Image (tube, rainbow, N blue to C red; front, top):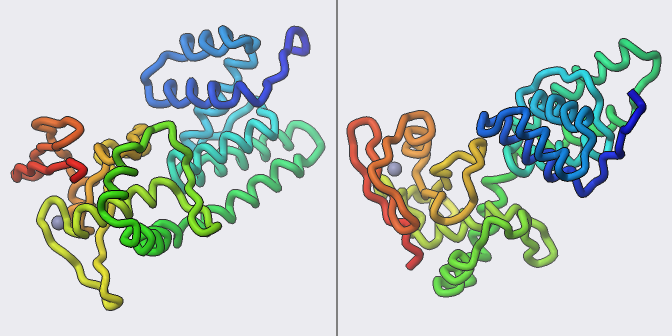
Length: 267
Ligand SMILES: [Zn+2]
């Protein structure tokens, strides 16, 4: 077991995650995923173990071979950012099962890992109040920016942009800012029914919905985000939208017998 075991260095983490996600989404067979990591210099057995453990983590299933603590922390971080709190809860469940399994075989406590579990559990609680509140705060900044600047920023947005933004010394999720900007641009109206929902404070309540869900690696660019009222948001998420045509500037689809032709133009 000790022969030829290369250290899994930090620079490999993003690639391991990428391969595990592609395998998890059934877009890549296991053999290819492992081979891709071996090409990057990983030992084959280690690569195979990481793919197994991490793909189990993504479905909340106990895994047997251990990963380093820094790798585990990196994966929890990315799972939270890319997939949100549900997937993070599953990953933490898998990690706990793994720790119980591991400790049952050897007589020592993996304290550092349990500390990680506690740290990320706290994050889930914080996240629950997070998005709505954050968007409401960002709505104010965005409105001050004015239409032209909002359009400019949205047009320049790239998938590779940082996941967080700092405004007045506070850090926010980039996605929340993008959604706030789109709400502003769409006049806080549902793009399916045009309704506006007034709030007591003078603003309007509206939600951002991803066309390709984040869990299927949908991006956070304006061509993937609709502004919808809560009813249509749920109808869209729970229903089965049939795409009639779609490009960067419009999205035409059929949902529960109705056809919707929505402009995604930034103007
Ligand atoms: Zn609506």
